[in-house]
Image (cartoon, rainbow, N blue to C red; front, side, top):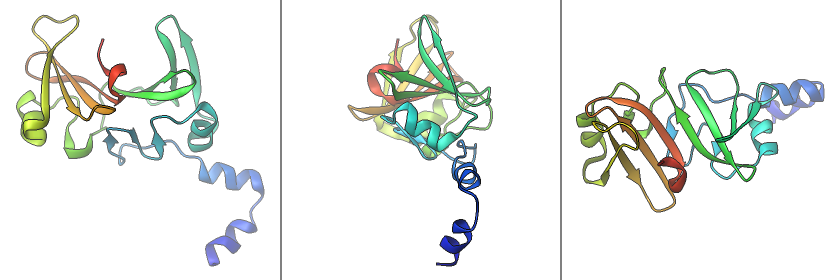
Length: 159
């Protein structure tokens, strides 16, 4: 009740700014999202969650979104969030996997749920995939250390 009264006394624009905040590294990357961002959200919903910091970039390889964090990016497919890309930094997955983890650590965290696939362009590398039929985590490795990770719709994680 007190919170509602306090928010009700703020100008509407300020309430929107306070409500919209991008995920931070304290949030764990999940199979289906990170923070309040969920796979399947459209651009309008992403803007509502992230705020004016959200930037959309159209490239030959797809439509990407971000908000200035050099280590985390979003892939949009048909206007909806399909994948979260992590290139380093402090980001961790559920279970604690991260860029820089050893393959053996990922295998220990996720045990018999790890599916090992060959890396698309690194003959020594592998991709460790964990998850269900719809959503998954994919840990790219150089054969020993995780070099990148992705989360989201399974068919967008490989390739």
